[in-house]
Length: 257
Image (cartoon, rainbow, N blue to C red; front, side, top):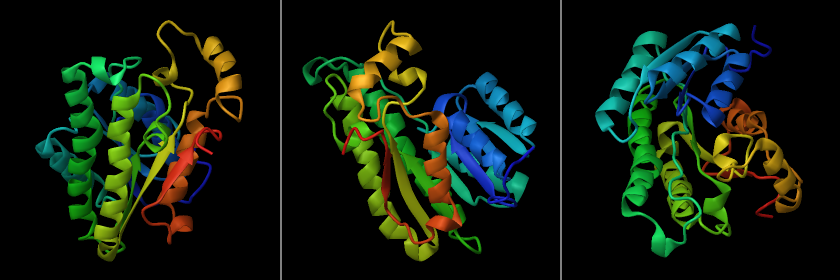
């Protein structure tokens, strides 16, 4: 059962929605009345997210798509419009971190290219497909790209390559926001810090070990919850943020302060 009507009648698309932050964002939109389209490369996790969205009382659609393929993204947007009639909100969350812990000189070329393809090119291609639809609609739409606090202040050893791709997302967000605000499309970003997902765990680390490490690593003394990151995304997607354009909202417990 939904708990809010802030997004009732609107349709939100979330990429990388099979787990982690993407799943949390999808569930947050469901709780606030939106129709939710979940996208990702693997069907089983998407079906799990879709079922959870429906349990929350929202209508849902699951579509497999590879964000590195423009054809997949065009088909994803078309499926969204065919099913729900419009694309009001898009969250470009799909991303990977590979080669973590390695200095720049030792980053594997294949890992680098994969991060570029998914984290940067994937966002560009998604923006293109989403904006082309939204600018044809009365009222336009809102897009939120998921960047990273590492792209804002890359001071964690072994994450420079990943941070470079996320810094690119932040710059892409700002430029696209200015390019398309006249089309009625608001584009912003959220940059999470360490959050309660598998991506923030060190190799072999448990959630309890991470919690202990974060007591000194993060000024707030803990990781951000998935719900806290999702709340930032929903704010930027909402009418409350009608004059927010090209922002990068950092949710990191003070790590970049």
